[in-house]
Length: 327
Image 1: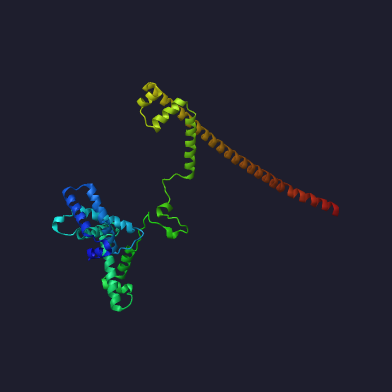
Image 2: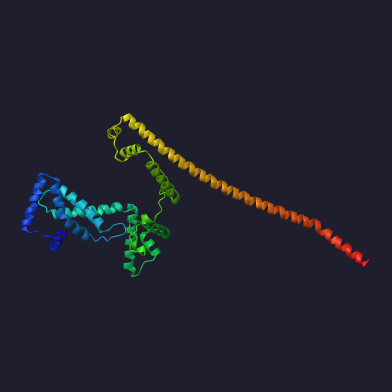
């Protein structure tokens, strides 16, 4: 049926084309060269798309049509390697089985559920179909559990085992976004190994400092580093370019490295000094704030003490004055 449909789609060959492909098969059987193999693969590539289309597998977030065709091409290559024209079987019939089997095998390998879970899924689906056909309505969960011969709790537990979604990190999430850009799930996840903004800034500053230090090197040492690290020349080859001995090249290389290390140490010491200055300023600010608070507390305590001491005396003086006036 598959071959008949394939021929009816306009993929049949005339006598000349058939003779040509038979000649290629004869040559390939005698001498299996990669060139003839590639020609046969190119010739039978439309058969792969036809067989994959007849499988009726809908594209999902994990797989698209091109993935299925790629799996089918593996089956086609396997069929070309194993085909024997002397048996009298048409290659289209022989390859169709292999192409379909390769696609199905790949789909099974991508299935994350174990075989026991797949078997339970089929049992639930079969029980639901039988009950709906018998009752003429959607079956309740207790009826499905009774049909399967298990308890309702076990049935619910089976549903929880089957209720899982597998997401591909490479699957496009265009439907979740408002713009036209195609974004995958991996682009939305945080990369724990990626440096943070502070680390990136420090690396950029370090690279700029190193670039400035290299520019400040003498011309000979700068050329030596370029030949050694960029051009990947050996010390012997660099000695011929600079017209010096190989030992002198080693000395110049060590001297250039020491200059760069000194520049980087000066950069790190400047950073440490800035950090220490900031810390000292922060400590001084905290101390001044603490001193102001302590002085304010002392003034408040003195005022309160003075009020405590002077309050009764003032009242007694005023009372004595009033007594003298009355008298």
